[in-house]
Amino acid sequence: MTTPAEALASWPPQRYAAVRSAVRTGDLAICSGNQMFSRVIQWATKSEWSHIAMIVRLEELDRVMVLEAVQKIGVRCVPLSRWVTDFQPRGKPFTGRVVIARHDEIARATQDQMRQMSGFATGQLGCPFDAAELAKIALRICLARFGVRLPRMIQPNDEYFCSEYLDECYQRLGVTIPWDGRGFIAPSDFARAPHVHAVMRVSRFPFRTGAVQADE
Image (cartoon, rainbow, N blue to C red):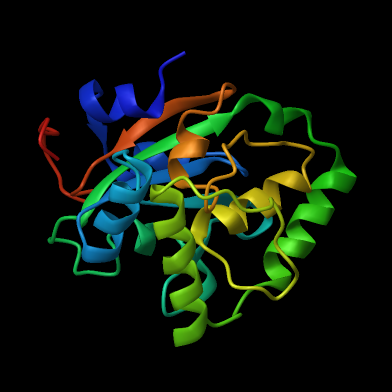
């Protein structure tokens, strides 16, 4: 199996149509960003990863959506077609790099577990972050950098970092992501989890026509 880090370094990027046809519910979109908050997370975790989101296919509506917790916004659900452009005009590049990854155990989740996960995930939609919550998240990130350990516990309606939100979703599917207990569970913990493997790397120009370039 290819790890997300290996795919980021060497796999050719894929355009939106290929990504949309390949993804499954529960797949991970793991991001390596270049904005200020992204760089803080990369610094804290000593990795290239700064954000993570989850794919949900709505087959009855012919839609592919992305669930994520975002700073200053909170938990949201957006179309994959908008997410891969970072909500910019389609001619502009995505501000970062993305690898789609898959946890092998998701396929074994029961229908009841999927309902529990869906209920939790959608129940958090619209929960906003305020300045105090962002400050607490930043504190956990800094504590992680200096090796401070915190309990693995997130209370309902508490503040969510992106990977903490997905960890809660995955727990309802019976999937545990190993982490070291320092500060917060991070996108890098998902990326290096034993049963997580890369599916594809996403082009920074997902709707461009013509040959795909390696630097996309």
